[in-house]
Length: 336
Image (cartoon, rainbow, N blue to C red; front, side, top):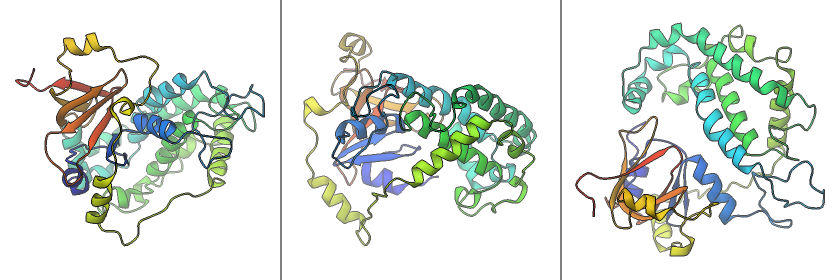
């Protein structure tokens, strides 16, 4: 929810979504690109501390811990085109109507670009539960393989499992009014009208979808068993953090883009004026399109665009966006 001075002042980034990742002075937006950046810059190794969200296939040798997995593209599509879009629309539709009557609803109306009718959303709850039921039915055959059967043929959970789990976990919780106090900055109380076992509980349960139910709880147990590597800079001020970031080395030109399967299609980009130095806007193609990030194009690839923000922030960084789910356009009147 606005205002977001940590982003606008520190990084000159009016971006309305989450999450954000910084690696030195390189700022990455959107989970789809963040995942690829982490996989690239912190690769898995048999002896290192990092794992991978693209684990070996079930058919690979148990000694080949880094075997290539040919379904990586399918996992990325599963996350971006299924769980983040139609499934997310279903789970978002389960948010209790009281939430939309708060300042959160006012903020999201500005983000979406139209007014939100809380009463109308409340009347559509049954439709959204039916939509969730549909998605679970589609998933059930793939997850009915018993213990250790993940969303895709891997020995351990992959991006597909992570993206699917958080949507269902969040949807089930929010449908019961859990987390709405934080979501609305205190504007709505926990539970209440959202505590509806006959609603989401009638759709997502062990007897109706035993495969999804087994997978869901097995995945949660797997996550709980992972080591906690989080560290926090307790007592560190924003100014001190900015100083650290500004003193860090940026990526070399040849390292600026996360590797993709194909080289940049220079001809197609140049046709649209997307050349280094051009003033461009980058915005999501769904919600938040009225809050573009404007800057000078540094580099563009088939999957990624890098800009230097037109406004100056405390941290002099470059901002990386995926091209998947975003629109990159030359600012009118700024074509070179």
